[in-house]
Length: 264
Image (tube, rainbow, N blue to C red; front, side, top):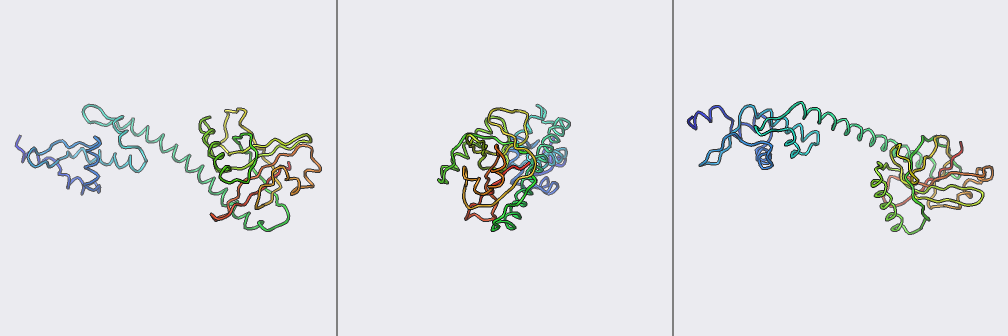
């Protein structure tokens, strides 16, 4: 078949770009990584030509970009004839989108929780009285730790805790701070990182019960001196569960802590 006949049935790279709305630079990149090969290349000019069927291929590539599928993974759904197994691709894409939706929903919950904390801080920051918060059950990944005033050491240890939680197969969330288990005999102290609820319970997992918590905002860690902030609670209970977590201040210049003591 003559080249003029071939070209009459094909699309130039410019025509393909105009039909699909994808710029020429992107189409060339798709060729470079092997997901959109021209069906004909002029041996003398190097001009590339594409079939009409490849319009759908470009649409599929754009879907990958929008969904967040690495383009090189398209090879998983192709064959030696450069055909695409659409059913397999759509099944894979559906599952990936569900995972992204779940992640977005979890991020939304985190943002809503941070918004609530900023609003609470604005309301109670300078109050000398405690406020009561009703909190849901939280799963904490913990590690024995002695609090320090050295912020660099603190955040270095926090980064290690984050890495340990990932290595254990847990999904970290945003809440971070110190957990204290007070008894008549002693105090157990831990650094904690909130994680997604899990059935994989190990010695590093603590479950913070849902219920009411007496809370106060402070500019420093009280640690073992928390009874000074909540004397009535500590005087009536032999065993007290408390945490100190960094509060969302809305600024980058200062750190404020929220002390939370479980009531019931």
